[in-house]
Image (cartoon, rainbow, N blue to C red; front, side, top):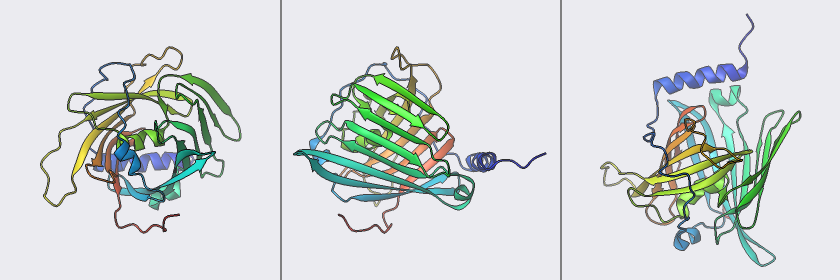
Amino acid sequence: MSNPSKLTRLALVLAIAWALGCASVPDDIAPAAGLVTAIPLDPVRVASLQDGEELIYDVRVGPLHVADIRYRVRRFESRGIPWVAIDGITQMSGIAGTLSNAGGTVRAVISPETFLPVTSIWTTTAKRPKSRAVAFSHDGNSADAAMWSETWVDTAHLKGASLFDPVSSVYLLRVIDPPQLGEEIRTLMVEGTALHLMTVRREVIEPHEPDTPKFIRLSLRSDAVDRDSGNLLGETPKTRLFVDVEAVPPYRILRMEGKIAFGSVIVTLDPHAKSPPSR
Protein backbone atom coordinates (compact mmCIF):
# COMPACT_ATOMS: atom_id res chain seq x y z
CA MET A 1 0.00 0.00 0.00
CA SER A 2 1.40 3.40 -0.93
CA ASN A 3 2.05 6.09 1.66
CA PRO A 4 -0.85 8.52 2.19
CA SER A 5 -0.55 11.88 0.47
CA LYS A 6 0.24 15.03 2.41
CA LEU A 7 -3.36 16.14 2.07
CA THR A 8 -4.62 12.81 3.44
CA ARG A 9 -2.26 13.02 6.40
CA LEU A 10 -3.35 16.60 7.10
CA ALA A 11 -7.01 15.56 6.98
CA LEU A 12 -6.26 12.79 9.48
CA VAL A 13 -4.46 15.20 11.82
CA LEU A 14 -7.30 17.72 11.60
CA ALA A 15 -9.88 15.00 12.20
CA ILE A 16 -8.04 13.91 15.35
CA ALA A 17 -7.75 17.50 16.51
CA TRP A 18 -11.42 18.05 15.85
CA ALA A 19 -12.33 14.98 17.88
CA LEU A 20 -10.14 16.14 20.77
CA GLY A 21 -11.49 19.65 20.99
CA CYS A 22 -14.54 20.72 18.99
CA ALA A 23 -15.46 24.37 18.91
CA SER A 24 -18.97 25.43 19.82
CA VAL A 25 -21.22 26.03 16.81
CA PRO A 26 -24.35 28.22 16.47
CA ASP A 27 -27.70 26.48 16.27
CA ASP A 28 -28.47 25.19 12.78
CA ILE A 29 -31.42 27.52 12.15
CA ALA A 30 -32.11 28.31 8.50
CA PRO A 31 -32.43 31.96 7.43
CA ALA A 32 -35.85 33.46 7.99
CA ALA A 33 -35.99 34.36 4.29
CA GLY A 34 -33.81 34.08 1.21
CA LEU A 35 -34.01 37.79 0.50
CA VAL A 36 -31.15 40.22 1.07
CA THR A 37 -31.83 42.84 3.74
CA ALA A 38 -30.62 46.42 4.07
CA ILE A 39 -27.02 46.77 5.30
CA PRO A 40 -27.15 49.10 8.35
CA LEU A 41 -23.70 50.69 8.15
CA ASP A 42 -22.59 52.71 11.17
CA PRO A 43 -20.46 55.68 9.93
CA VAL A 44 -18.68 55.87 13.30
CA ARG A 45 -17.63 52.23 13.00
CA VAL A 46 -16.50 52.69 9.39
CA ALA A 47 -14.39 55.68 10.42
CA SER A 48 -12.77 53.60 13.17
CA LEU A 49 -10.88 51.53 10.57
CA GLN A 50 -7.51 53.22 10.89
CA ASP A 51 -4.97 53.53 8.10
CA GLY A 52 -2.12 51.14 8.89
CA GLU A 53 -4.12 49.14 11.42
CA GLU A 54 -2.84 45.58 11.68
CA LEU A 55 -4.46 42.66 13.48
CA ILE A 56 -2.89 39.23 13.98
CA TYR A 57 -4.97 36.15 14.75
CA ASP A 58 -4.05 32.75 16.16
CA VAL A 59 -5.88 29.88 14.41
CA ARG A 60 -6.46 26.57 16.17
CA VAL A 61 -8.12 23.34 15.10
CA GLY A 62 -8.87 21.46 18.29
CA PRO A 63 -5.71 21.73 20.43
CA LEU A 64 -3.41 22.38 17.47
CA HIS A 65 -2.10 25.80 16.45
CA VAL A 66 -2.31 25.60 12.66
CA ALA A 67 -1.88 29.14 11.33
CA ASP A 68 -1.47 32.86 11.89
CA ILE A 69 -3.60 35.33 9.95
CA ARG A 70 -2.50 38.93 9.59
CA TYR A 71 -4.90 41.62 8.34
CA ARG A 72 -3.85 45.15 7.47
CA VAL A 73 -6.02 48.14 6.60
CA ARG A 74 -4.91 50.88 4.23
CA ARG A 75 -6.88 53.98 3.27
CA PHE A 76 -6.07 55.72 0.00
CA GLU A 77 -7.57 57.91 -2.72
CA SER A 78 -7.72 57.36 -6.45
CA ARG A 79 -8.87 60.24 -8.66
CA GLY A 80 -10.26 61.93 -5.58
CA ILE A 81 -12.34 58.88 -4.53
CA PRO A 82 -11.60 57.33 -1.11
CA TRP A 83 -11.05 53.59 -0.80
CA VAL A 84 -10.18 51.05 1.89
CA ALA A 85 -7.83 48.17 1.05
CA ILE A 86 -7.74 45.15 3.34
CA ASP A 87 -4.80 42.78 2.92
CA GLY A 88 -4.68 39.36 4.53
CA ILE A 89 -1.80 36.87 4.83
CA THR A 90 -2.29 33.33 6.14
CA GLN A 91 0.88 31.58 7.30
CA MET A 92 0.56 27.89 8.17
CA SER A 93 2.61 26.65 11.11
CA GLY A 94 3.69 23.47 12.85
CA ILE A 95 2.49 20.18 11.42
CA ALA A 96 -0.12 22.00 9.33
CA GLY A 97 2.62 24.01 7.68
CA THR A 98 4.56 20.82 6.94
CA LEU A 99 1.62 18.97 5.42
CA SER A 100 -0.44 21.74 3.86
CA ASN A 101 -0.04 24.58 1.39
CA ALA A 102 -3.23 26.30 2.57
CA GLY A 103 -1.48 29.59 3.26
CA GLY A 104 -1.88 32.51 0.93
CA THR A 105 -2.64 36.17 0.40
CA VAL A 106 -5.88 38.04 -0.16
CA ARG A 107 -6.74 41.65 -0.94
CA ALA A 108 -10.11 43.39 -1.13
CA VAL A 109 -10.66 47.02 -2.15
CA ILE A 110 -13.82 48.46 -0.59
CA SER A 111 -15.82 51.67 -0.84
CA PRO A 112 -16.01 53.27 2.64
CA GLU A 113 -19.37 54.82 1.72
CA THR A 114 -21.19 51.54 1.04
CA PHE A 115 -18.58 49.02 2.22
CA LEU A 116 -19.18 47.13 -1.01
CA PRO A 117 -16.01 45.70 -2.60
CA VAL A 118 -14.90 46.62 -6.10
CA THR A 119 -12.16 44.00 -6.43
CA SER A 120 -11.01 40.92 -4.54
CA ILE A 121 -8.13 38.55 -5.27
CA TRP A 122 -6.82 35.53 -3.39
CA THR A 123 -3.76 33.37 -4.18
CA THR A 124 -2.35 30.34 -2.37
CA THR A 125 1.34 29.88 -1.62
CA ALA A 126 1.46 26.33 -2.99
CA LYS A 127 4.10 25.28 -5.52
CA ARG A 128 1.25 25.21 -8.02
CA PRO A 129 -0.79 28.15 -6.76
CA LYS A 130 -4.53 28.52 -7.15
CA SER A 131 -6.04 31.95 -7.58
CA ARG A 132 -9.45 33.61 -7.34
CA ALA A 133 -10.34 37.07 -8.59
CA VAL A 134 -13.62 38.98 -8.58
CA ALA A 135 -14.53 42.31 -10.18
CA PHE A 136 -17.70 43.81 -8.71
CA SER A 137 -20.01 46.30 -10.40
CA HIS A 138 -20.17 49.83 -8.97
CA ASP A 139 -23.70 49.27 -7.64
CA GLY A 140 -22.73 45.95 -6.09
CA ASN A 141 -25.44 44.03 -7.95
CA SER A 142 -23.27 41.89 -10.20
CA ALA A 143 -19.78 40.44 -10.29
CA ASP A 144 -17.47 38.66 -12.71
CA ALA A 145 -15.53 35.91 -10.95
CA ALA A 146 -12.73 33.58 -11.99
CA MET A 147 -10.77 30.73 -10.41
CA TRP A 148 -7.68 29.27 -12.05
CA SER A 149 -4.49 27.28 -11.67
CA GLU A 150 -1.86 25.98 -14.08
CA THR A 151 -4.24 23.39 -15.49
CA TRP A 152 -7.82 24.71 -15.27
CA VAL A 153 -10.00 27.82 -15.16
CA ASP A 154 -13.59 28.47 -14.10
CA THR A 155 -15.53 31.70 -14.62
CA ALA A 156 -18.97 33.02 -13.71
CA HIS A 157 -21.10 36.15 -14.06
CA LEU A 158 -23.05 36.46 -10.81
CA LYS A 159 -26.05 38.65 -10.04
CA GLY A 160 -27.65 39.69 -6.77
CA ALA A 161 -28.15 42.65 -4.48
CA SER A 162 -25.18 43.87 -2.40
CA LEU A 163 -22.49 41.32 -3.28
CA PHE A 164 -19.55 40.96 -0.92
CA ASP A 165 -16.39 38.83 -0.87
CA PRO A 166 -15.17 36.80 2.16
CA VAL A 167 -12.84 39.55 3.46
CA SER A 168 -15.32 42.41 3.16
CA SER A 169 -18.10 40.23 4.60
CA VAL A 170 -16.04 39.49 7.72
CA TYR A 171 -15.03 43.13 8.17
CA LEU A 172 -18.69 44.04 7.62
CA LEU A 173 -19.33 42.66 11.12
CA ARG A 174 -17.16 45.49 12.48
CA VAL A 175 -18.93 48.34 10.70
CA ILE A 176 -22.65 47.48 10.82
CA ASP A 177 -25.07 48.61 13.47
CA PRO A 178 -25.49 45.18 15.13
CA PRO A 179 -28.93 43.59 14.80
CA GLN A 180 -31.20 43.31 17.81
CA LEU A 181 -32.13 39.92 19.22
CA GLY A 182 -34.50 38.18 16.85
CA GLU A 183 -33.41 40.25 13.83
CA GLU A 184 -31.33 39.09 10.86
CA ILE A 185 -29.02 40.83 8.43
CA ARG A 186 -28.70 38.88 5.17
CA THR A 187 -26.41 39.59 2.26
CA LEU A 188 -24.80 37.70 -0.62
CA MET A 189 -21.15 36.66 -0.69
CA VAL A 190 -19.09 35.58 -3.70
CA GLU A 191 -16.61 32.82 -2.84
CA GLY A 192 -14.64 31.69 -5.86
CA THR A 193 -17.33 31.35 -8.52
CA ALA A 194 -20.01 30.29 -6.02
CA LEU A 195 -22.70 32.37 -4.37
CA HIS A 196 -23.72 32.21 -0.68
CA LEU A 197 -26.35 33.88 1.47
CA MET A 198 -24.65 35.18 4.62
CA THR A 199 -26.93 35.50 7.64
CA VAL A 200 -25.88 37.55 10.70
CA ARG A 201 -27.76 37.26 14.00
CA ARG A 202 -27.19 38.67 17.47
CA GLU A 203 -26.60 36.12 20.19
CA VAL A 204 -27.08 36.21 23.96
CA ILE A 205 -23.76 36.45 25.82
CA GLU A 206 -23.25 34.28 28.88
CA PRO A 207 -22.03 36.06 32.04
CA HIS A 208 -18.28 36.66 31.91
CA GLU A 209 -15.51 37.93 34.16
CA PRO A 210 -15.47 41.70 34.85
CA ASP A 211 -12.02 42.14 33.30
CA THR A 212 -13.08 40.51 30.01
CA PRO A 213 -13.33 43.09 27.18
CA LYS A 214 -16.92 44.04 26.49
CA PHE A 215 -18.12 42.61 23.20
CA ILE A 216 -21.18 41.88 21.10
CA ARG A 217 -21.64 38.27 20.04
CA LEU A 218 -22.91 37.66 16.51
CA SER A 219 -23.49 34.43 14.65
CA LEU A 220 -22.60 34.04 10.99
CA ARG A 221 -24.05 31.39 8.70
CA SER A 222 -23.29 30.83 5.00
CA ASP A 223 -25.84 28.99 2.80
CA ALA A 224 -25.15 27.98 -0.80
CA VAL A 225 -27.28 29.75 -3.42
CA ASP A 226 -28.09 28.61 -6.95
CA ARG A 227 -26.30 31.24 -9.02
CA ASP A 228 -28.88 31.11 -11.82
CA SER A 229 -32.17 31.20 -9.90
CA GLY A 230 -30.94 32.88 -6.72
CA ASN A 231 -32.69 30.23 -4.59
CA LEU A 232 -31.12 28.52 -1.59
CA LEU A 233 -29.85 25.04 -2.47
CA GLY A 234 -30.91 23.59 0.88
CA GLU A 235 -27.49 22.12 1.61
CA THR A 236 -25.99 21.89 5.09
CA PRO A 237 -24.04 25.15 5.59
CA LYS A 238 -20.27 24.72 5.61
CA THR A 239 -19.74 27.87 7.68
CA ARG A 240 -21.40 28.50 11.06
CA LEU A 241 -19.50 30.77 13.44
CA PHE A 242 -19.83 32.76 16.63
CA VAL A 243 -18.07 36.11 16.22
CA ASP A 244 -17.23 38.41 19.14
CA VAL A 245 -16.91 42.10 18.16
CA GLU A 246 -15.81 44.84 20.55
CA ALA A 247 -18.69 47.02 21.70
CA VAL A 248 -16.40 50.07 21.86
CA PRO A 249 -13.95 51.62 19.34
CA PRO A 250 -12.11 50.35 17.36
CA TYR A 251 -14.71 47.50 17.23
CA ARG A 252 -12.13 44.82 16.55
CA ILE A 253 -13.11 41.21 16.00
CA LEU A 254 -11.79 39.48 19.10
CA ARG A 255 -12.71 35.87 18.42
CA MET A 256 -14.36 33.56 15.89
CA GLU A 257 -15.38 30.05 16.82
CA GLY A 258 -17.32 27.39 14.97
CA LYS A 259 -17.36 25.24 11.87
CA ILE A 260 -15.85 25.89 8.45
CA ALA A 261 -15.36 23.57 5.47
CA PHE A 262 -12.76 21.23 7.02
CA GLY A 263 -13.85 21.16 10.66
CA SER A 264 -14.07 23.12 13.88
CA VAL A 265 -11.84 26.15 14.28
CA ILE A 266 -11.10 28.84 16.86
CA VAL A 267 -9.58 32.13 15.71
CA THR A 268 -8.48 34.60 18.40
CA LEU A 269 -6.93 38.06 18.22
CA ASP A 270 -3.40 38.21 19.61
CA PRO A 271 -3.24 41.62 21.34
CA HIS A 272 0.47 41.17 22.13
CA ALA A 273 1.59 40.38 18.57
CA LYS A 274 4.25 42.69 17.24
CA SER A 275 3.40 44.48 14.02
CA PRO A 276 5.29 47.01 11.91
CA PRO A 277 4.47 50.72 12.31
CA SER A 278 1.60 52.25 10.33
CA ARG A 279 2.31 53.53 6.86
